[in-house]
Length: 159
Image 1 (spheres, rainbow, N blue to C red):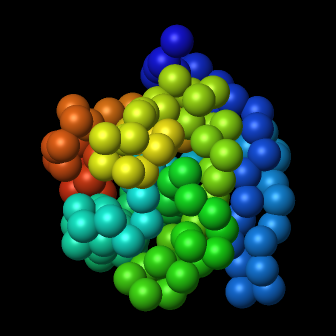
Image 2: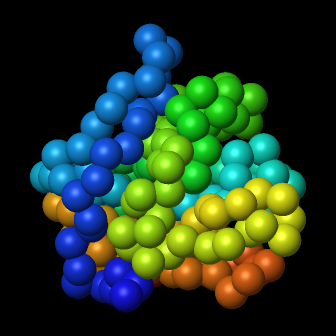
């Protein structure tokens, strides 16, 4: 079953990319007591993700924070080293990278996807969500191949 507005995020381990190296975090603890703009990409360094998705959240970070977002989090079924390198190459200090290397978060939310036809294996769909104290307040899942409703601009329009 796919996660929906009003649902609590699944409680799984994720790995935060930090300057000191990977840091394991428990999702239930990580999203507690804060408002998070969370977006997910099928893969770091992929064309749409690098050209549009991440840059949009970097560009709109101040506006999101002005609307009450405490933290902007990107996730993907990649390891923390890849997400850390992607943030260094195209991101900013305003974006926290939480790796879902084994796809456990993707599966637990029901937002997993099979990208085997592209040689990418099991990944996650492209989406965004606004999360308050671990509860989904907004959920924007893209149709395959699209990029519009998961953008930072779309999220700002919902706030």
